[in-house]
Length: 305
Image (cartoon, rainbow, N blue to C red; front, side):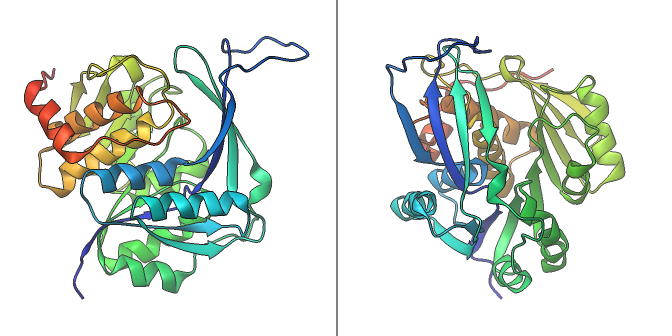
């Protein structure tokens, strides 16, 4: 069977309500007046990775559980408007949702509604297999339904990536994802020893490449046993929101990986895409396109060390 699909994205579909707050942490008060408005829009981690990959010209198919509810309708409309194929598995508990409090410096606090999942949730094995055999690569979000899909993806012969987000290096929930993926992304925010965590992921699992993003300090890339510091890319406009920056980094990195670039170049693309995402308000979805990414990459060749 022909692998015409570049990336199958599993999980991470949902809706966020964005609230711009005067500071984080937010001091207790009876009420706050939100002059910028409170906005609800489709877009959680799997949605943002899918949007980022599609904007870079890759063929993407997203599969996840969605409810028959207004939030699910927003997710379906987002994919339809951006021409991204979507397989929506019915979720009686409803579509995933969250509230993001965003401070003036772009930092955010996310409140996730865990009532929209059930212990037995899962993606149908036959659906995952049918899609996986047409794909070159699968990006697996760490949302609950996706862990059981990992063996199916491995049997289908696709390379696998995952994003552990703010894993502390200890929580066992993340380990199956960390050790089954060929490419592992995570944030260094909760790590005391990013290099040690990356090396443990590589030693215990299948990862050929592992990246810990560190915000304004850039990123740490482990490839072929060597650790490289990837400098932060200058944002093209003022930073307004960090929401989606990690997802954009993953999309940029995977674009490089799937077009045959070496690991340092992949991470450089990721840094450029992540920096762009920080300039986009959380109430909008505007991923970096291929032409703009390549133009920025030409203008600013990376200096690693």
